[in-house]
Length: 198
Length: 198
Image (cartoon, rainbow over all chains, first blue to last red):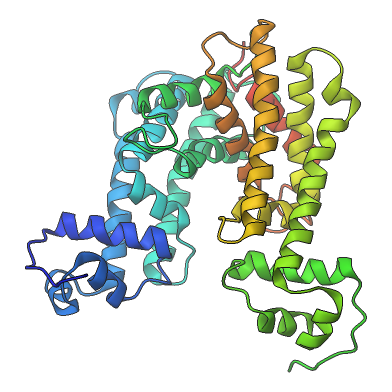
């Protein structure tokens, strides 16, 4: 039985509930009614916190983007050889994805039907673009294999990192790879050194 | 304007239309009405070809699975060192994914609400399992980096390969990587040799 409960939500805790519903039903398939039921508070209580579901989406996507763009501001992303900065950004992107799993999952699934979704996709492309720039510089330094196509490598690199959302569950759920550090390290090894013994 | 047209469909051409609709709307979100509209023929004409949408799903998934399991029967997947067989299977999996793009896309998206979907997921796990076995043998031969966790590496390898469905478009559409051979080669290089110059 669902009972309306007293509204003790903070913006962050309400957001956490909303993101779960968005990821489960899809953003398009989620109504304020669904959010109200999942949160156990009335729609008007939700409107007390936010203007509507698009604002919740914007807040959730912002959290994912802040995490990702924050990586580019880290010292190890800015100083040193491009190839080492690229490795750092790769490891940290995998880590942020796992730390902010529901938020980044939502970011990766938006499809561009509203202004907020289109903004999310544009910002995501911007991030990918900055990583592609690092790949280009590493190639210019002679640190990338000469037969690497930068655009293609960027896509495959993000393909590998982003696929983590499909199976990673933090509390050692059925996936069993609860150790985020181990996962991030495996991504870096595979992407930069490959599986084969030298 | 949509007009009912004469039913000149073959099983294969009707399947191609159905798979397009499944991928666009999701299998759950597709009704016989949607299929009838997309094909431009009546529902009863569709029932003349198949028993219903679940049979169309089964046929489509079978086509993807036949392509994938066919790889494992190829000589280069069966003879030689495990690491070389693994490279062959990786390249061919990427190629089959691109050749049978809509069918493999559908296979990767099924979520297990019907018997057919559960069967598809079980067969897909079986394929992943056989590739994981090859990784294990390559590790036992000393051809895989000793710090590689087989389960994790299998997941990341498929994560990279499967991500191709997100952007690859065969006719040089907006993706621009129309050359399937180049893409498959890039996957193999990245997975086995890594991006970094030795």
